[in-house]
Length: 245
Image (cartoon, rainbow, N blue to C red; front, side, top):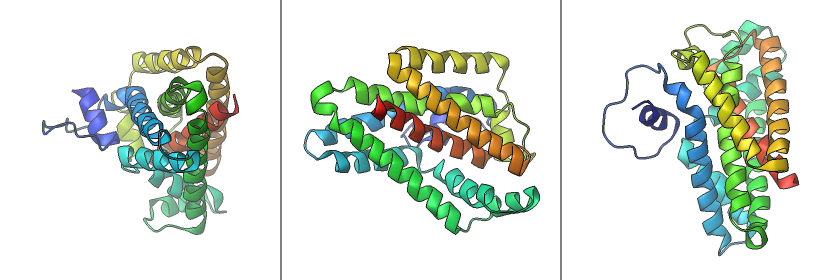
C-alpha cells in the first residue's frame, strides 16, 4: 500500500482507484523504488524511439516522457530554487520568493538548463543504443532515478527551513532502517554498473553536496522545493556522468 501511495503521489502512473493513505507517513521510504521505476519506463521510451528516430529527437522524447511520468512534480522545485537560491536576499525573503507561484528569470533559466541537459544526455545515450544495446541506457536511467531519490534521505537529515511544510511532512515516518535501505539500494545500483556506477555516484554526491550546502547557507535548511530540485539536478548529473563513461 505504501508503494502504491508513493507511486500515486510522485508519479502519474495509473495505480487504480483504491484510496491512498491520508498522510505521507512512511511513503517517502519508497522513493528509491519510485525512481527506479520511472527511470526504467523513461529508458523504454528512449529505446523505442531510437529504433526509428535520430538521437537528438530520442533525447527530447525521453525527457518529455520523464516529465509526463512524474507530472513535472520536481520541476517546480527547480524553478523555485532557481528564483530563491540565486537572488541576493535574507533567508526569510528567499523563502517568500520560493513560495510565490510566479516564475522569475532565474527560475526560468534553471528550468531551461535542467530540461536541456537531461534531453541532451538522454540523446547521447540513445546514440549508443545501436552499438551497445539496451543495457547501458536502462542502467543509466535507473541509476539516475534511483540514486537521486536515495540522496533525498541524506537531505532529510538537514533541519527544515519551513517547519510544517511538505518537506517536513515527507520526512514523517522515515526511520533509520529506511535510511539504511536507501543507502544499500544506492550503493547496489552503483556496484552493478562498475566504473559507470562509480562515476554516477561521484557526480550525484557532488551535486547533492553543492545544493544542500547552498540551501543550508542561504535558506537555513531544506524545503520540499529543495528536495525536488535535488532529484532533478542529481538525475541530470548522473545521466551526464553515464554519457562520459
